[in-house]
Length: 458
Image (tube, rainbow, N blue to C red; front, side, top):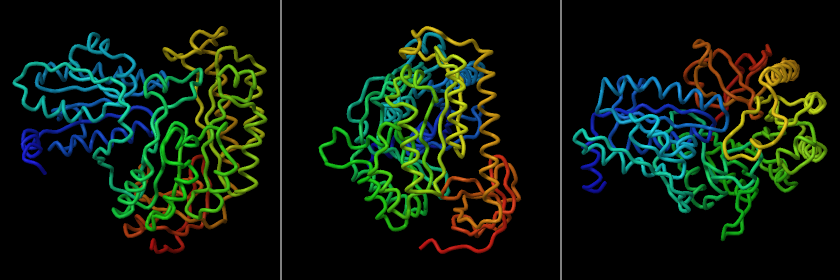
């Protein structure tokens, strides 16, 4: 460590940071990078904002609910700031990128705002504010950074056996409802050698499962100087000996190729689970969403996957109440759920997002109708998921044990390759290992079983 870095670290020694993450797994991984930067700057983590010297709220604006939660949390911090004027508050993520200086004007007690492309600027601000004598430092870092995907930032992950690695940033699809291209920019793929090096390091640290992250991992490699696509990247990572499982999210149905399905089939470490967002069963709504496929085309991709990998679990996303969605369009979605029989879904009411083309579409649906449709979707899928889980009763599954269950501290929990949560009674020495579990009871969102034996991870 250089003397300059040591000095900066000493300036922050004894200070604590509180980090609150809103939204998706990509935001969670971004927060791991922020925690890495803050820790490397000499700060320690606090579990509550009342005990922190620096507070970072990492925001999400993909859906209105996550945005509302952020504003509620930020509102509570005004009193905390008044009681501790030296407290530094930063807002990160998509809302920061979207709102910019308007956030500083609306919430004058916020000190620093930075977007997803400017996480690296957090260190500069923290080190500068550590030398502050009390004067407020109000800054924004929101510029598009064409080099961000080349940066290797420190990452502080929770101890465990599963890790997440970003392989690309941004999106080129411009779905009518989605704000991501406007807040995270256009699509950029990380160099394969950097991804391989990061996953190799994780394997050497004891992580046994990696999830590769991207808005559309299927399009990895486009516009890169090296001739590589997502399937090629999976083959590279598969060669890392101590990394035993590989997952990825999210795939776009339009770009799900036969090559990728065949790659999943031939690589033993690939988990037999695919998350493939449908969004709607209506061709009219899919067209208005700018999804780039029909329901028939989506169904053909699913059939291709199930023919190649019949044991695969498939999950999806559904949006109800999109502008112009008539009752027959909604029923087409219900029919699709019945036909596809997904293992699980994430379902949401459409919420208008600024700058997206859907805002200006005619036929916006009232909240009462959207809530009713969402309830019907969830009720239907609840029955399907439970019925599919029941099929596991009496079978033996391989589970990677993650630790003790959050809902029942007497039980261990882990996941199958198909991403089913399994709870069972066991001891500490099972954590981090692959175990064989005989499933004795299926529940709505998990399975319960009895430990048979453990496997070696070598």
